[in-house]
Amino acid sequence: MGLRWRSDGYFVVVMLVIIGVIGMCINGDEDGGGVGAPMVETEQEALYSAIQGFVGNWWNGSDLYPDPCGWTPIQGVSCDVFDGFWYVTDLNIGQIYDNSLPCDQNLEFRPQFFQLEHLKTLSFSNCILSQSTVSIQTANWDSFSSTLQSLEFRSNPGLTGQIPLAFGSLKKLQSLVLIDNRLSGDLPVNIGSLTDLKRLVLSGNLFTGKIPENYGYLSELLIMDLSRNSLTGSLPLTFRGLTSLLKFDLSKNQLEGEIPSGISNLKNLTLLDLSNNKISGELDFVDQEMSSLEELILSNNPISGDLMNLKWQNVYKIMVLDLSNTGLTGVIPESISNLKNLRFLGLNDNKLSGNLSPKLAELGNLTALYVNRNNLTGHLNFPLEFYQKMGRRFGAWNNSNLCFPNDKVSANVRPFGVKLCPEQL
Ligand SMILES: *[C@@H]1O[C@H](CO)[C@@H](O)[C@H](O)[C@H]1NC(C)=O
Ligand SMILES: *[C@@H]1O[C@H](CO)[C@@H](O)[C@H](O)[C@H]1NC(C)=O
Ligand SMILES: *[C@@H]1O[C@H](CO)[C@@H](O)[C@H](O)[C@H]1NC(C)=O
Ligand SMILES: *[C@@H]1O[C@H](CO)[C@@H](O)[C@H](O)[C@H]1NC(C)=O
Ligand SMILES: *[C@@H]1O[C@H](CO)[C@@H](O)[C@H](O)[C@H]1NC(C)=O
Image (tube, rainbow, N blue to C red; front, side):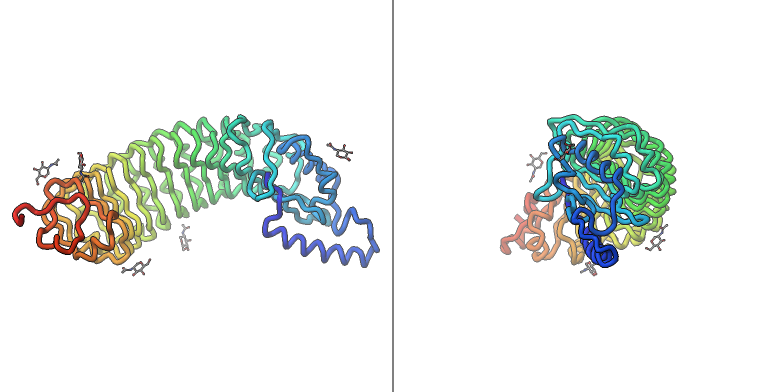
């Protein structure tokens, strides 16, 4: 239970002192119970009752916090003044802070909670623990439809059940974060109609079924993270409409089908992670201009194809390129060494053949290069400093026809698991 001021609370405190001083000058108000703006009694009772429903009946708000928006602030609660009265705007429940209160095993969403008229931010973090099994209240969310902008359930292993359909009524929502809970069922279609959404994070749950097509109409979306669930089906073609997207993570699901070519429409994308799915097709989309791309992670998918004809100059900002275990064939093009920002290159566990160009050592930012378990051949001709710098982060083992030149052995640096070239023995 994290009931404490957020940083914006300090602003409220300062304002409160100012308003309080002005108030005392004007009214000579010395009633210690209500400094500054008053709080409507129904709002105050709604707050007490809401928190009591979350942390348990032992918690007595009116005893402990007689002036919750004023001189006895509650951790995790922020307020603001509307028409001369205090209202609760932010409610952060859960063990966020050192002296937070734990949530009740029988956490309940009381009807009074839905009477908070100006609630903008609601979060439950580390709140519903594994012993309990609580579901999110299904009804009444529409009462927040014109106020709630941010809704978050984070790290609640005891939170089960489905996403309430009534979340679809939260028309002002800009951020929906349901991460690391045990929510299940299909992703509700009506979330696709929350067109103000900028952040949709549903990762680390037990969601199944297909990704609704209309999620592709969330054109304001900056972050879509549906990773670590059990989603199936293919990537909707409508995703070409997610033109604002910066981070797109669908990793660790059971998605299949091809990568839609429309993905290359997402010109502002910096992260694309589709790893650990059953996605096939080819890497054609790299041919398009995706010049913002910094991390492309497609590992552990049956993608296939080769690297030769891709226009790597279109993704020149790339820092992390992980194509390991994707069924790649053919050779590793020397043009990859033009990707100057590359820090991580994973091409291991493929069927790549041919030589490894020593030009890759010219990538000054490269800290990891994995080409192990391929069918590479020839002599490894990197400068000795390269092996020194990389250590085990240069993986070249299990390429049966790749070898390390004998004349370099004396330097006492040797890539792990690579045999000496036989003709020089
Ligand atoms: C909280 O305490 C006050 C005063 O001690 C008491 O009147 C009130 O009934 C209590 N409320 C709850 C919900 O226990
Ligand atoms: C992409 O990013 C640029 C620069 O930040 C911005 O001006 C532009 O509006 C963005 N495009 C979309 C479709 O959001
Ligand atoms: C390393 O990356 C930075 C940007 O992250 C870039 O400015 C720099 O040129 C790169 N260094 C080399 C040696 O390519
Ligand atoms: C590896 O390459 C050699 C030719 O260099 C080829 O004969 C062999 O079939 C390849 N092995 C695999 C597993 O692809
Ligand atoms: C290469 O792969 C085999 C199994 O295919 C394994 O036993 C061996 O340890 C690997 N070699 C290295 C150097 O990792």
